[in-house]
Amino acid sequence: QVQLVESGGGLVQAGGSLTLSCAASGRTFSTLAMGWFRQAPGKEREFVAAIVWNGSKTYYADSVKGRFTISRDNAKNTVFLQMNSLKPEDTAVYYCSASRSAAGYVYSDKFYDYWGQGTQVTVSS
Image 1 (cartoon, helix red, strand yellow):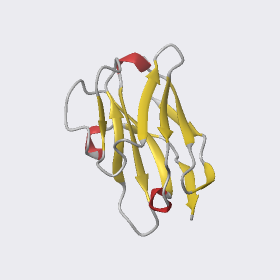
Image 2: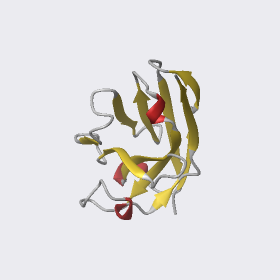
Image 3: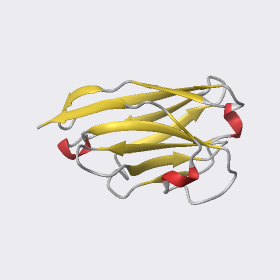
Image 4: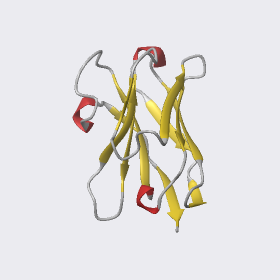
């Protein structure tokens, strides 16, 4: 089992920045692929970003490419999502996720085995 706890959400003005953190426990973090998803009110959960176990590859949704950066610190069992140039349409609950798989379609929520409770990000215009 893996427990994931997100933090760092909040209210920010458009154009601002936030950094989300996700602390993992319960399994060797360095073996897990990690992802971030988000869900806005009335919408389906959507992929935001992912990073492989050693950080050598990252993946982004087109809507956040160039503005968001995913990274990880395996020594601290933590994955981060740096969000810059935030827009009102980035408003959502952001979820951290973890996968035991070494390979697969990281853009699908079916790839992930564990999920956090989510943290709210609200971007005001």
